[in-house]
Image 1 (tube, one colour):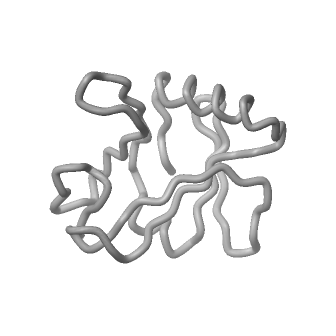
Image 2: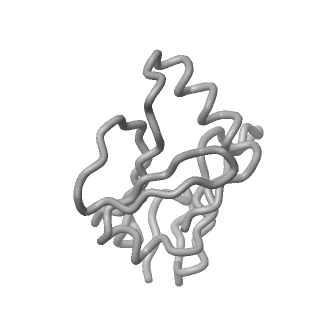
Image 3: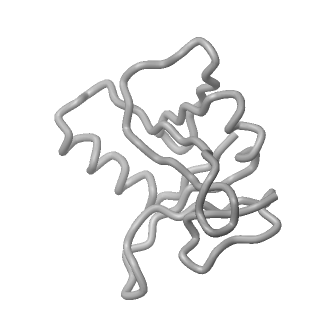
Length: 107
């Protein structure tokens, strides 16, 4: 399961409302790449696939494909709007190493 902080919830709901797609949800995934070997993916989507796992936390629906889910178990999705950068942040307890930008990790 992926937890969603209150700040991530507010930002996600605002962005989904702005998109004009009332049935959208957050799709989170992992792909190879980045300076640490694996990169996070985060998109809004409206279609679930057969191999997806879906759950809800803090009123936000999250969908993850089964392969990515193994890397993301226990992760918290947060949002930072501070001076050092603005965007969604993954706090992943499974990551052994994270790059400086926080967009890639290794296990």
